[in-house]
Image 1 (tube, rainbow, N blue to C red):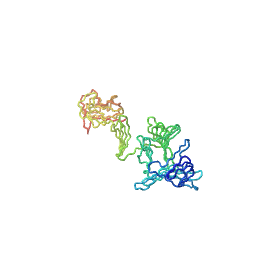
Image 2 (cartoon, helix red, strand yellow; image 1 turned 90 degrees about the vertical axis):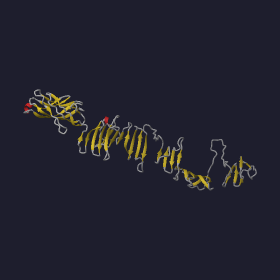
Image 3 (cartoon, rainbow, N blue to C red; image 1 turned 60 degrees about the horizontal axis):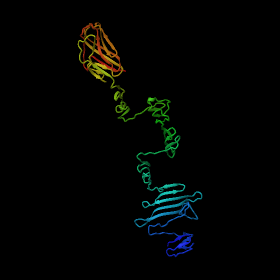
Image 4 (spheres, one colour; image 1 turned 45 degrees about the vertical axis):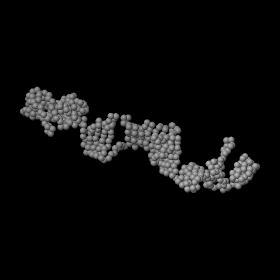
Length: 489
């Protein structure tokens, strides 16, 4: 039957009950009409055959208090912990015509102790035929999503992102700003940023800590706003820092240069033009370059025009060390310590064609051929050596003459340079030779030359003899008139 209560006392007929007036307290089929309300003592079902509302709670009260009110009250005379208080289910049928509970909201009293009561409210949703807990609120414990550890995801959507926060229940991962990634915590985005914001500019610090059961900050990365420095800690102590100027100290809290690696304090300071890398140890210190035994270790020196204009190379394949300047090797030491200088000036020039009946006085020796010229400093077209750099050059000469006239009072061998002439190996044929014939002048000198100074070998004789002396020629394998030059210092 249906009953409509109009005001406090008037009952309007419905179904088989005729109109009754002044019916306050009348009971019909277990339903009591009292003071305009309905009190039912048995289970009730409200059924409709259409989509209209089965039950409406309407309050027309105009004040600011609560209304309408729906009250679930378990009036137990012996309340106990974990007593169920209320249960709301949402049921329907499946495609087999079976009744199915699709959603359940349940509530019970976790703790009924006076003064320390705790309650529970849980939401369950049928998933793949089971009825797992999706969300629970537990007094004294907090709120829990997916209490039963099921394969259930949790997703929070923002205004512009479908996965602003996403918990992947099946793979035990948490995602921020996306759903990709294979780590426990994944942050996605085109320009991904994580902000640790300090509200105190002067003394605050932001930290990323790494801990274990023994020490919750055994490792940490910390940015200290006091001084604007970042420190890195392992085994619960600072090992590296970057100061406000960008200088990095490893084992050093006040870096003396761009990178300061310190394992012991020497009290020394760094030279201003060489403080990009500082290695400090109160004892022996060093830098190791480790390479494969068939490869090379390198130190490069470069500039904007050439990134390997200078270079030091140790080749482990044959255990030699070489040095390069201006991209050219200038020094090499082999595995036995033998040192060679591939660009060091070093010349052996000789006369390959005779100079016959030379004039008296000064005559340049025509050194028109070479056995070697390491740095290409000798010109055979004019028999001239040109110093490539300023230095001291060791020069040795050998002049062989035939048909030397014994009438000469003197004959010299000479080195004639841009800044001086070196007279050497003087002979007086009148005294030293018994007859016209063959003689050899051998001489050497450490010659001082500036860059681009020139040197020639010549001979000078007095004017007393005849112009009959001959400069003897030789070959590359048997030079007779020749000169050697090399840079000594």
